[in-house]
Image (cartoon, rainbow, N blue to C red; front, side, top):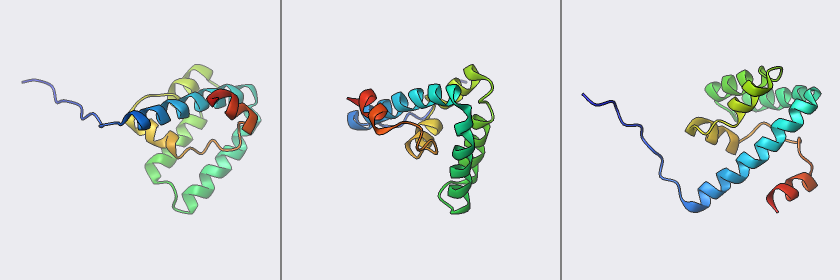
Length: 111
């Protein structure tokens, strides 16, 4: 009996490019958060507000919480935040990591 096949999502080139841009931004945000961990409190507040407003499902809420809890373990934090699994790709598209990068930093990364 062969193992079950993983369902691959069909991704357009534009969508894949967007995901790569988002991943690049999250990589930069991860480094900034690791350098300035005091910013995590604001991120937790954003997560709570979105959860209370029904903008994020319970599973996503728990997933983000577990990532933020790893801030004291840089390798684990980076690995979790930059995971290329379908779930994390979706979570990054509606990220709670807002206000971390300046507009100049964002433009430099995407320019």
